[in-house]
Amino acid sequence: MTGVDFVALQVRDLEAAAAFYEKRLGLRRNPAGPPHAVVFATEPIPFAVREPLPGVDLESVPRPGLGVALWFKTDDAQRLHDELAAAGVPILSDPVDGPFGRTFSFSDPDGYAVTVHDR
Image (tube, rainbow, N blue to C red; front, side, top):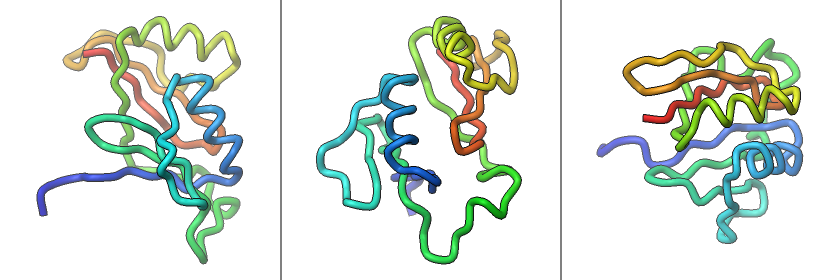
């Protein structure tokens, strides 16, 4: 094994989740995605949202992805925080300066905790 090569979140509503990541975070769709997922052109690791796998009931968990840390890098974490907060996106932790630059966390529409940093 050489490392993480792909990350996907199972979501309740594929198009709503894809629209959130496009409109709120500025991710671009990769046109080569499969029919049950939307893959984004993120680097160095591709990121996707996808329909739940058979047997996965996202309604039965209090918060999907509990215990998993998902981090995205941006050029300006404070600006993104301010835009998300103004749009009513739940902020889980306010921006702080640390070893990864300005860092904050928010909740996506499915309840996944996402952390953003700018260094």
